[in-house]
Length: 130
Image (cartoon, rainbow, N blue to C red; front, side, top):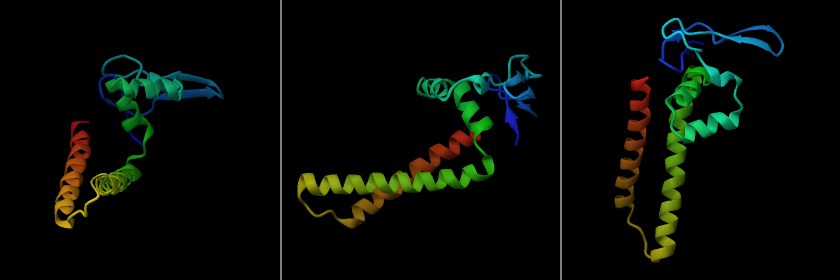
């Protein structure tokens, strides 16, 4: 697996060296001379808070140094389709129950297509930027 520095995005071979169980040394990036990924020592809650705060370093940590890229592309595609399917089902159910009218399928088919295209565009654009 290829790792990246969370500071500058430079590719590195390894994030840390483990001397014994519980005794590791974090590697420094050869490009920016900073610790390549300090999130290795952080608890999951710290990473989640930084993700909520939209810190680029936290996103780089998760996208490049945690996720397995071979499985991730297919899994992201499945998540997009399943997430949009659930959203659309909830949306259709809410419209039918709130408005008590029958929904025309052709209009919702266009809505589904727009949601799928926008979701795929966002995930593809985020992959291109990194």
